[in-house]
Amino acid sequence: MADNVLDLKVNLENKVAIVTGASRGLGKEFATYLGLCGARVALVDISKESLDKTVEELKQKGIDAKGFVADVSNNEQVEKTVADCCAQFGTVHILVNNAGIIRDSFLLRMKEEDWDRVISINLKGTFLFSKAVSKVMLKNRWGRIVSIASVSGLIGNPGQANYSASKAGIMGFTRTIAQELGSRNITVNAIAPGFIVTDMTASLPEEVKKAMEEQTALKRFGEVKDVANALLFLVSDAASFITGQTITVDGGLTT
Ligand code: NAP
Image (cartoon, rainbow, N blue to C red):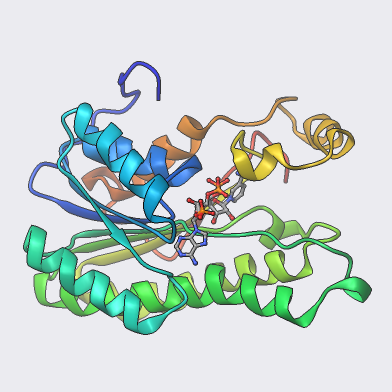
């Protein structure tokens, strides 16, 4: 985020947010946006070096940020992270399940380990973090959980059987736990981005990028701020009657 200017003004003072996969890409932007709205932010990532660098950058912007190294697919590390976050910030109000990976190949060539790793980080990680924070949110009788799915989970994408299964799983998981947690004022939603300019999409072959732009109604990739704005809306009071939903932010790719 170059200029620190927010498109949406959302007051998150006195709120504590956890963002997973927050060292770079969308997660870094989510942490920045939440912090600029006043939230204290716990950034979670598997790589300490890049995490420390990002936490410093956020602090330079005046954000109360702390880094927590954890693998979202490891239950012990997830539970410890939520406990450490509560010890340092007092509680947790907002969770953004953002950490995700791709290990693309066509079905017949897809290795079992690539299936397992993608499901484990993208889907199981979402389950583990949601479960761990919901214990705190139930006591608070307030919470916001937003998980980052993908249009790949809605319409599929050749070469992404593992990834699209994980993202479709997030949407079903979201609908179910929204029903389980709703009576305690906890909303649970997902965002399904289309193609957004980040390191993840930078690795796509040029011809795939061109084809994706062509299929997108707005004829371009989205920017990270397009998704961050949807997140700010979902965690704001303006969205307090919205739960169990997946909001698509894809420039019209799936229309
Ligand atoms: P990215 O640039 O690859 O960043 C992902 C972050 O997650 C990295 O910091 C990565 O750490 C971290 N991470 C990976 N495995 C982890 C683990 N086991 N535990 C904790 N952190 C881990 O990805 P992105 O493009 O910002 O995407 C973020 C989310 O949006 C993902 O869930 C992705 O599926 C979803 N999404 C992205 C797009 C898009 O166009 N970019 C579209 C639809 C959905 P390392 O630096 O160590 O790898």
